[in-house]
Image 1 (cartoon, helix red, strand yellow):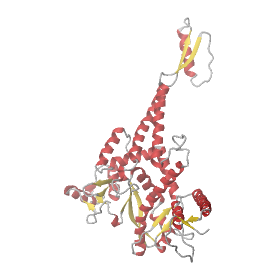
Image 2 (cartoon, rainbow, N blue to C red):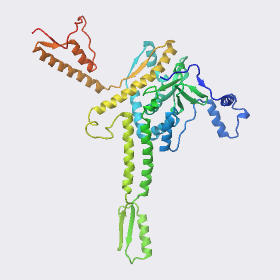
Image 3 (cartoon, rainbow, N blue to C red):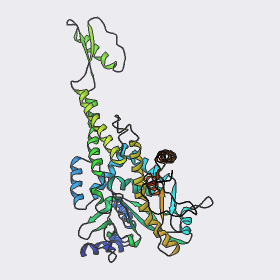
Image 4 (spheres, one colour):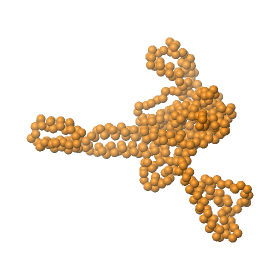
Length: 452
């Protein structure tokens, strides 16, 4: 787990740069020395002095070379270009954006179960007569932004800013771009770049929080951003190349006239073909011929780009949701109920990871409300009503089978031991307990004799 560095909240740069930054912050906006003579640039500087987050970088082109550089820099802990490339893939590519939207929208709409001190839970959850504090502390839009960054990239960044509600100071979650993150290998800590300098990530101060669904140690190494960005770069080239080739291989209309036709006749016929571009019929005069010819291999070129785009789409869906039913569609794996279980298990994994992330924020809320440290967790119920019905049917089927086994054993003077029945029920996730007033029997073998 990354070690916090409470003794130094902000790592100062070199002395010269530190003095320049302090001078710029201390210089009033209306000071003549702060004026550059360029109004637009001055407005940008004024905005930069009044904020904390650095402007985001939005590249116009992303190539395989950009991805290669991002991979190399990520190995050293510099996540800037890797986060930018992942963000652009998740926003420009409709398939990735749709899958991530399905995950977040579905998760935040699930039934919830709270754990923690009753007074704190009541304040956070609210009821029919009053809204809870949870929606103010963790706005759904900010939560969705962090989750959509953390699931593909492995790291989602948020800042707990102070705000006052009901006369009490609390901490509200704000989403930040992961491109401002850097992992310092020497000190085993996270660093966050702002226009105030480089700040240390320290959860104990209740300011910076990280969403780490794949673990706390080098999570970007285990996240699917490499597969997503590879598919994105290749498919992006395929989108543009298919459009260019489609324009280049427009079928050519070829007209012919008899050998004794005049030059004026041939020009007139060519003008007729040009004017009849979208006509579904054409009247030919004696001595004229007409046919449509395509470019050799043109249709196959477009098919190659289409296959690359289709492969990329299957890759991102499989990486994020673990599904192949919408991609391969073959027999066996994708047609079995296993496919549905994989998708449900994937959603459950994301739900548990997000509950762990929220728990640290709600724990700060409990401290702000009561002055005591307490763990508060909001669990998202990923099981559907159909899952509950299937569970009941499974329990019923197991009970019927146990009755038949019990009846068969009685014919030979034996019966199932309690430990065996308990083990079977635990294997399907069902807890059993003794009836009130019943004595705990002594340990017995799995099958024991009974009086006939």
